[in-house]
Length: 143
Image (cartoon, rainbow, N blue to C red; front, side, top):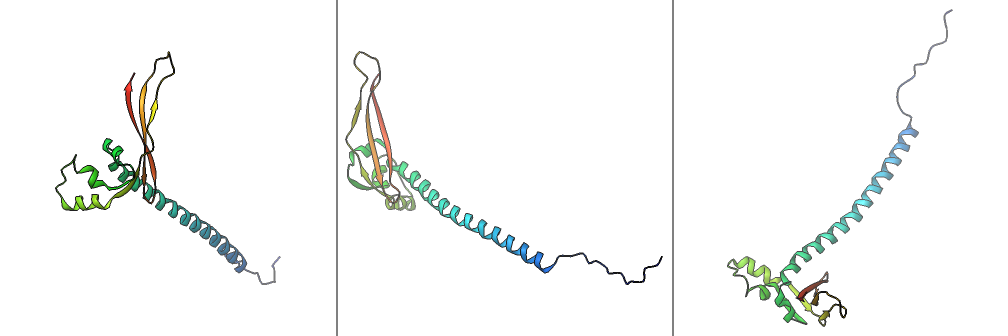
């Protein structure tokens, strides 16, 4: 009836092997996450610079930009005739924002003979900087 053997108490806990395996698995997951984060950081920096340049490019896209083929102009040079910029800091910022402007030959779009359509002139505006970009200027001549 009575058990004369001393009873072994089971301890609740993990063995050393189980702890080491869990540390290895967690380390692998953390390294994988850090690698993804590093790759994403490079993409985020690139996209941020690209968006910043696109915003700055909008300063160069007035209709008078078509006169400046193969010129290197600042945003201030293009905007000073149209805007009165009183603050010196803004003027200096615009003077530092430069783009090389390249305008290829104008393209005339005409409808096929004996068919109604739009006639338009199209100019490509290429702005060259660390992130070059191309924009299009359309001028409708007739319907």
